[in-house]
Picture 1 (tube, rainbow, N blue to C red):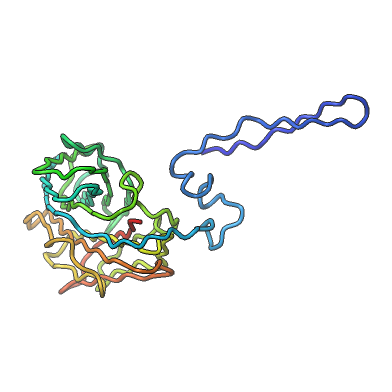
Picture 2: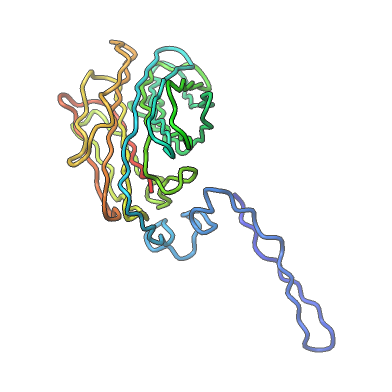
Length: 284
């Protein structure tokens, strides 16, 4: 986004009268609004490299997982998943991964379901082993519980293999704006391979009571991934059972009573040295 500098115009009445008329202010988009009106790389006085100041967001409630579901698909551009929750005022979350080792790079075009309005939160598109992969987070405010909510994922094109989880989170103070705004989370992601571990480091949160959400995607080995110490799996691993177009998905969460500051999260495979990626994010 182009930043518009104020225009200063000078008008004289007599010898010393000066009037400054600023130009119209720049439009601040939602992502920039999270960071005080500027993107992290453009902020004038960051408190850490690339990061603007982060005011603490005090949260004392403990968030809980409310219902989970898993899904997968192979060699197509669409998939579904059915989620049931039991609580009011949830945030429904979809975390998604696909590999396109034999096809072009693609992303999610839309996520839809009958009773929820889905919003894109984040995309990570690494090249792993020379091939395009996609990791995404979508969410939807869920003021009432949903039963057998059929969620449809539509991609921009056909991919090799995809796997994903959907779940409800209860306890977020604002279900319409549930994500921690700390800008370190924009790059809390990593892809490696072949490797015996994967680490995302330098994770900070503004929230003093965040729920950390993490997930991994792997392509070349049928190997479960061990979550970081202290984290809990959201549900059992998901995979598409294909011996060739393989996609293996692991997810986890961890509640904290203090803000993360330079936190590090490491996942390891139960065997082998796979190609894989990992994403970390946080709910307020």
